[in-house]
Image (cartoon, rainbow, N blue to C red; front, side, top):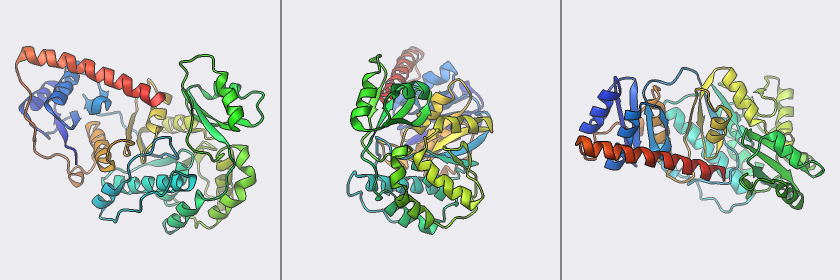
Length: 409
């Protein structure tokens, strides 16, 4: 496991002294977390402490001069994403469970099964780490993960559901993500009866769905070359009227799943409200979810109005970025328990570290955090320290801008 340094103190001065001395742990509202704390990363953390402004994860550093504002915690479950992360075998070993079989292909069925499996494992791991939600929501197929995680879908039905849900026939249509708000993206499809807006993800991203040639014409109408646009590497027709003729195959799977009362509310991105208690209404909503647009931006706004302030992604995807874009300028916190690039257990530990830095109380001992320092403290010479801090601040800022650009393109 990758080392993560955690340190806390009463204020920035004391926290700076703790890092300089190599001391970890401590108590107090001023906190820092450093992933892979080699000396150069410590210098970057010191630069952030000197600036005194919160820093939320850029360059794998987290600094909170004070606890985050109180508010509810929401688990967000991603659906199929263009990026797929490593399997959660390391998390399963940490949980004391056997690793699952390796995905056989990148087809829709295997992608769906792998996504639901990863979401499920990370949800279990978050609870084991003492991180619990007040509500849940999902994006596209991730909404099914939320229904299982909350207990609304009976747990024994998971294996059959995950195996069969992605195997039903689907239309041969494409999805294209565009860096435009939903209203502007919908205008691109005017005059194209076989293209619809399928996802309203954030103020700066929407998704069109339709016939490949027609979607290509829509993308060609984007005059600004700086606007991101990308055809996604999977086809399903989910969240569009094109799926309607194929709906019976999915309805049959839904009908086999026993329903229970959920432990926490699950919010629908179709109705922008919690799933209903009435079974008839609920099963009808499961079908609507597949042929109507995903209104993820609206769900985030509604959850925020209801008091949610912490959004934890239980899977691998772009939901934290969608939340950040939607709630820009308003106090909130986003962390992801899954990663497209690093081992999943390392990412889970990093998510817990970030929450701890913001004043939350995950089970650090269970995750092997808070160990004694193993890296030498950086030089304490004031001139060298000032120079290194300035360079570190620039480096951290450049890294954050680059990562944001990569996510948007």
